[in-house]
Image 1 (tube, protein in one colour):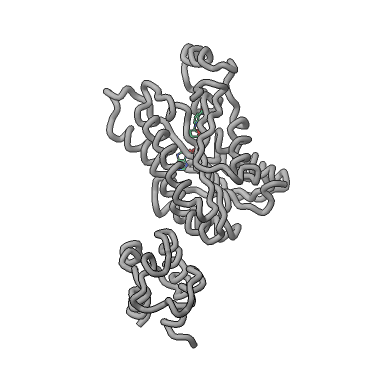
Image 2 (cartoon, protein in one colour; image 1 turned 45 degrees about the vertical axis):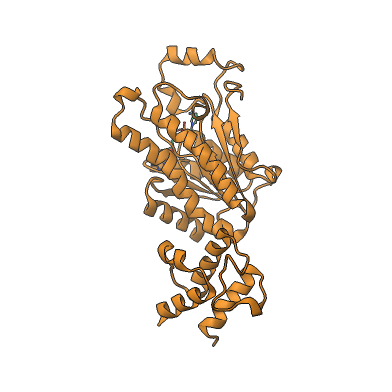
Length: 78
Length: 248
Ligand SMILES: NC(=O)c1ccc[n+]([C@@H]2O[C@H](COP(=O)([O-])OP(=O)(O)OC[C@H]3O[C@@H](n4cnc5c(N)ncnc54)[C@H](OP(=O)(O)O)[C@@H]3O)[C@@H](O)[C@H]2O)c1
């Protein structure tokens, strides 16, 4: 069973086509990982599918870094 | 056939132009979600006509101006056909009045159905189309949305709004291969125009270079073009289908 961090990282790597080494907690999707605003919307959609949860637009707007995504999901599934 | 295997949601497809669009897309192989608001029987007739020609279709009641209703419509489309490849935002109403006499609810009803309805339906399909990395959205505006028309402030505002919305949506979604275009019909014979007084119709005919009214099928053919692979390099455009009434 993979951890939340592993699963989130995999979604990010697949979606944004970045290298595993770039996916650090403090990395910003837009500033560090080359995502545009639509990429971030899509990333959130894929996280919803991966973890079978709904992320409201309000919450989604607060997810800006890899760490934000991981801690949001960890909080939600615990 | 050009649209074989594709699923098309056509709003307001129980009558008039929407009905013609549903039949045309079906004749090219698409599976059709025939949306309607009140006329269940008319919608069922459209479904049966499609099935009689060997096509697939279902009728789904939904109010395009209502968020939950639209969500349910798209969910039913997905559950039934497994994809949404084409959305035709056709549902529309008129509540004509002079600006000075126009009531708030006449304004609100038309804006909510004709403009907000396009926004809600578009928003509801983009998630699926983004995943598919493909989609076509075709909005039915009106030539009066380009030229203006006394007595239709609400309708003209909504239809001009649809053209702006078409351009913006086209820009936002182009990178995901979702193409968004509009058609602007002129004077088309449907129940919407049947009710107009004869002298007004005569006056309008004088402004049409082709000197005749259009048929719902004339609009449907153009919509089918935008939905097809022949339109792969066209997005954000508004095509006038008006017998030459407005040339800009
Ligand atoms: N006819 C023309 O000359 C002309 C010209 C330019 C543009 N247009 C545009 O073309 C489109 C179709 O017009 P038409 O002449 O075919 O009109 P129509 O014959 O009056 O048909 C309107 C259709 O929209 C549906 N509808 C109305 N409100 C709805 C709602 N809230 N939610 C879902 N469906 C709704 C109706 O469903 P029900 O049957 O269940 O009521 C019907 O299927 C409209 O957008 C109109 O503005 C028409």
